[in-house]
Amino acid sequence: MKSSERSASARSKKSHGHQKKKEGRVFYPVKYGADPSGVKDSSDAILRALNDAFQVQSGLDLLPGVNDLGGVIIDLQGGNYNISRPIRFPASGGANVVATFPKDRHLMELWSPNSKKTDKTKSIQLDNFSDMKAAQNVGIYYEDITFRDLLLDSNFQESGHETFISSSFLGQHVTIGGDKGERNFTETAIDLASNDNAITDVAIFSAAYGIVLRGRANILTGVHCYNKATFWGGVGIVVKLPGLSFTRIDNCYMDWTGIVMEDPVQVHVTNAFFLGDANIVIKSIKGKISGLNIVDNMFAGSGSLNPIVKLDGEFTDIDQVVIDRNNVYQMALKSTVGKLMVTGNGTKWVSDFSSILLFPNRINHLQYSFFSQGQQPVFPTLAVTNVKNNVVTVESNKAANGVVSVLVDQYNMVGELSSLN
Image (tube, rainbow, N blue to C red):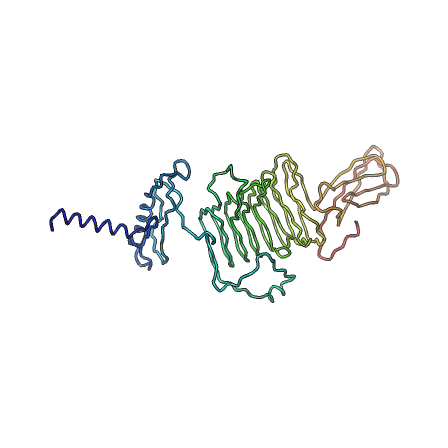
């Protein structure tokens, strides 16, 4: 064989070998020398596959100056890979490095073929822990699952037990905020239908619903929801499983999109920041609220005086509710605790808490004091003569110049009845 023929043959074999490393826009690090057994170091092979993938051109930009790679896939094909140094993306940049999925499935699934089909439209109603223990075991198929450092451009839904979702960005559309199509967002970023999970340091930037919680004993910390705004019908966090929630929401940022709770039982919301008239809506399913704490949050609005907490429907079974110590800017304060001072010179002092207290016509406890003013102190006999529609009336047996201070709350223990209303 001539030298030129050998050279052409070598180029042909090299080209053929390169083609085996990829199929279409799918790149296989194993064919670059990565070792799925974990014996050899695979850092160089994965980096070479990544660098080749970032050379793909689609002729489009996903964002100005950011090359759209057209959905290239780095397919590790399973295995255990030994990595000795960070897998750094090429400095040239790029976007749209994704996996492809069937249209009728979810972007990520934790789903066993042995799982029993359930009717998601029905909520499991359990009255106590004995009922929980006796409830039918539908099977737990996933443990110690962690999703972390993700940028997902799709609807995300998973089901399992003790799952951790952290340090992730989730959205239906690629956007940096102020999206003109915001009012048309339709999907749910996280639909969590299981118990004992944690969502930590997650930003949700485009979705109709940020997080839907359908299970018990979940905790959310450091979640930033700036998905579809509340005034366009968007919701940041939905707490379902009415009557059996056991949910903790701590140190979250509700950015123009709020929280909806259905019959919350043992739900705690604290240290959160609600911006742009975002608030908390408590929705009645069977009219039950128990063990609800909404404390130490900040609410900032646009001047419309939207209430920070709002009731949607009628509630007839209420106990152990504390809504207090929240600070408000250009929104209407709502609380289960009220303090008022009324100054007057006469025989009647009226304290109207109707604009402050959350529940209508419901005062469970009250205290009052009288401060006598003027050069000649007067010592009248005073009494509370009326408590109705969250208005407290204090009257004296003779005219006096003074200040009546009244403290009321809407808190009651389980089974505690108030005789004030």
